[in-house]
Image (cartoon, rainbow, N blue to C red; front, side, top):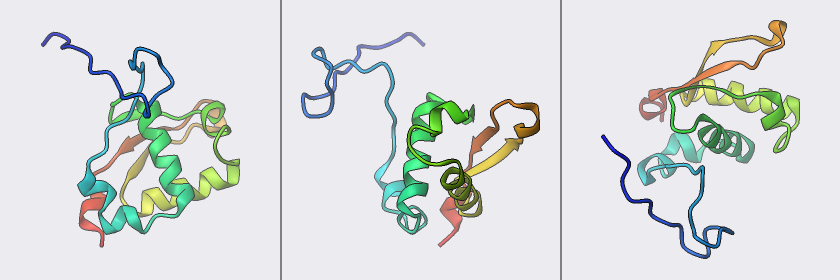
Length: 115
């Protein structure tokens, strides 16, 4: 499958003159309006959205400290991850803290069944 025509963002959605962003996220309204997502704290929602950006559309991804330290404290991140796991949005595939490598996460559809 070849790459299709790129659709530029509108002027109020970007700072790029041509409207073409290198990275962006995709979220459906059924996820954003679902009680599981609505019940997340603002920090957990923010961490989730930044995880989606960092993942580049992949289900399994790394999220290093160098990325999340720009948006939240280490404790805030750990708390948000705990909530995201409990709420069914992500799973921890590998805990690599002792190896000084980023943890590996997986997006999960379990949130759909949690009310």
